[in-house]
Length: 470
Ligand SMILES: Cc1ncc(COP(=O)(O)O)c(C=O)c1O
Image (tube, rainbow, N blue to C red; front, side, top):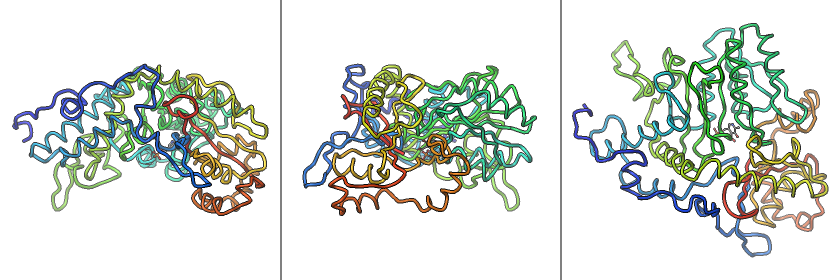
């Protein structure tokens, strides 16, 4: 039906839509003024004593601010937003075109051949990985191989749905290819999937994803890359299906790549979604009778319910903007700042960086987690915020096994820690208590298990360009 309607007046991505709403390319891409591209980075935040300082966000590994162009596009797009796919009004057709062009933009960005793989819009990486795990769980007796480096989003769905084998890491927390190969061999064909992060949210270590992919394929398994941390910094290429190092699944989150509007992406092999979808509802079907259901083709079948159109369009806009800014230039800038941060942290007595202080390179993102001897991580984070206006994440960063590994705690010691770590203190509670606690302000604090984390954001000069998250 929509095919019969006159085409809407949008062509090309950010499309006619960019021309419609914004116009032009991003300015001064290589001027070194990275800060100017990000929203809210100059905001004044209150500190103890009643003053304000320009807030420093060292929490970008958790969530990034929007690119200004993405924010402006979202604002402009809100005026033309309408329901997608089945609406015939002009705005519906415009929104449908924008939504589907966002999908094409993601596919181009990741090098997806849409004949073999499908780009599905989801809520984020957690949602994407849970969907893969739900399908994997239907394969009786097959297991998923994970590493100790994984974020809980790339561990718990396998553990609790499909079953997993967890492989160790090198002493300083890098992926161990030999351990992965040994586990695959030992699995004797039972391992159907290798799941690993493209980069760690704790150390910033970048995984050799294509090498692991080759290993997985050699032993008859597929590979799933949790690209939540990698995608904002590196170009990812899924590679053609006949390349032994190709990536079968890629998951990522818009809010970690400067488009915090609730959308994420799952790239998966088309034939993976063979049966009924895990999430069922409107939009996912061709026809429903009293007794029967005919599922729609992909990607609709895996996008039941009303999709997050604005989130998807924002992701497409963020990707386009990052490409224009230049991933190589951005990574160079981030690496310079990250190396400076690591040097600075290692020069402070009593501060230890988790997983070594090697310089930031393409193999290590500009991110650092650190412990402060004798101070609880919550109090360190609260002091940074209340005294300096510096936002960091603290705790175990949703990657407990990895943090235990980096702290050399081992299985038994970490198991003993279980009752004491739940419930763990929430940062807001610490902040409130810190603000009321004179002893904290006079820095006479003592506590156990200190930890904090910083991650750099491509933005700004010097330390103001940095941010953190857990
Ligand atoms: C490596 C990694 N994987 C997965 C996730 C989960 O992403 P989301 O919360 O967007 O689903 C995160 C979030 O911090 C992460 O750092």
